[in-house]
Image (tube, rainbow, N blue to C red; front, side):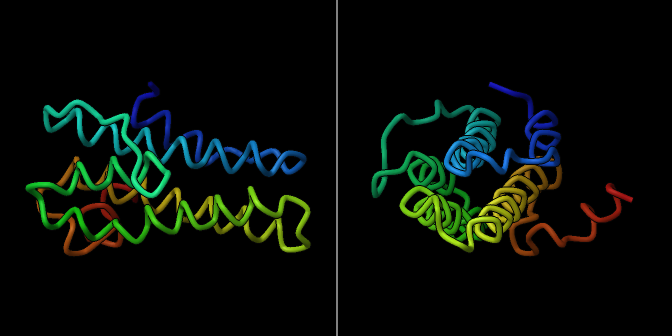
Length: 138
C-alpha cells in the first residue's frame, strides 16, 4: 500500500487519456487506499467486503462507525463510484475527458478530507476547506 503522501502525489500526476477505464480504476483504488489508511490509523483492519458492489463504500461505512463526523465524506465516496460507473460503462462517450477530470477531482477531495482528518481532529464538520488544511498547504 502506498503512503498517504504517495497517494497525494499520484493524484497530482497526469492521468493516461488513452485508457480511461484504467485511469478510473486507478482513481477508485486510490480512494480505497486512503480509506484503508484511515482505518489503520484507528487500529481497525480494513474490510474486504463490498457494499453495493464496491469496496470503497464498505471501507467508508467501516470508517464512519464511531465517528459521525466521518459521514461528511460518504457522498464523496458515492460520487467516486458514480463516476467510475460512467467511465466503465461508456468508455467511448464524447464527454469522457470531462468525466475523467471530474472523477479525479472527486478522488482528490476524498484524499484531502481523509488526510486532513488524520492531521486535525474534528475536521469533518468543515471538510477539506478547513482553515488548518489551507494554512498547511500555503
